[in-house]
Length: 632
Image (cartoon, rainbow, N blue to C red):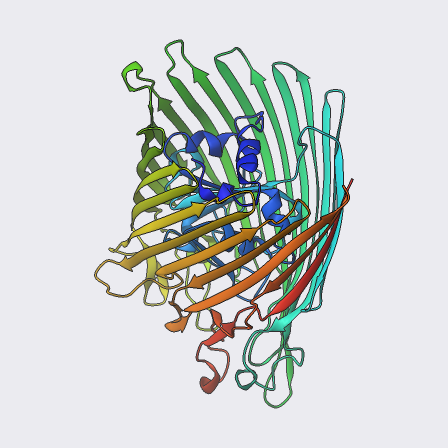
């Protein structure tokens, strides 16, 4: 359902209306909204919110606008790192771009470090288990990143930006329609010198002289939708992402970087067979290629090449057929079958996988009861047959009930599964690392979310209780991955409160508590903070001027048994628009210049004993950002 986060700009009521009335033309595009009407908790970040962020990356967007989500790059902007949704592990979240998997059967981490927010139309975040409709890894939720597309009229924009961390960026977008063809083109590029990740005393003289971690990312894409007739349409997407990302180390490495190239292609045909039957056929290809280079030096000044353009990457491709059937009595079905293939190769971990195939069937039944006109219910099943990993049968149950004119109660429950990643299956011992196990079974999960939405006058309140259990846990025994006779259990509460005082003022606050532990342990699992909180105040004194203040708290967490987190951050920003075409935005990130530990770096066993202890990695320092946007 809609959350206060949809009320993000000063013209709150108008924005909610605009989002709700967008005509989604395919089953795939409407999937998140469809599930939100059946008990799932949905948060949507829209285009206006992206543009207020300036030089931030996707992690910045998610942290600001999604309650209950912790996301931070391990080395600043545009880097893989930590992610936790309602106390989950990062591997419990399914990430999509335009409905295509990003963390797939072999690479279960988050590889969004080359994706620029300037090319995004919206981000849809579904909380709670979504394994029946979306499949593996949707244990704690699904995050779908939707790239820019045609919104009903010809339009275009160009923007440029810079900040005091020596960052420069630019983006463009153009969309139009000619008769029955809708076409969109988007592109962006960002480069930065970055900032110093560790304190001076923690960087050894054998490391790179350049102590700032820089990056360059570029993205380009196009979408074409052909409305063939009133009953059928074809949509084609092509997207290319590039990144050159430094991977600094605190000891003995003078050069270390990844060069990424990613390609996504989708063809989607939708056919309205009748007023009651809607069909969709989708094929996709996702290729992800990364080349890793690392050059070390020892205390005698001897230089050695550890990795010379070493390759690691994957191919992910598949076919999906889905249908939505509405019966005369109002009952409806969402049904489908999927075939997914994955192949990975990694010269760093020294493996080449066979092609892994997953075959799935799923169905979700939504009965309508005349006696319960204010209630919607859905029950679903998914069966998956996985090469080399057996099979999995999962179920879901959800719904919502309108209590009165002010309140809505929602609930969802179900099971899910997570397939072992490439690390867990194939990794080899390197620098004291771990050994993979190709005989691992999938992890299994059980989850429950219960929430209330209450809106009265200028206030909106949304408390949510969540509980989740992951069994057949993939963990470490000795120095090898094994299915442990153990589980992770998470329980917590999320509280969101919003106030729209007038057209001039808007305030939103959120707090999340998540207790996540392995069975029998009194300690929080690593990489997951217990507490998250934030508050955002917006003031729009005129149509031309908008100001905001954002305060956030990230609770303490550990990684490699080392403490991080436990910090408050203040951010200030605003925008000024003149004429019909020009907008200038300013943002002061980390306004109080707080020095804080955002993550933890583990040097590994290849460095001398005195340098092996994990080190706190510093978060982004204070920086001032300017962005100019021209719309035509």
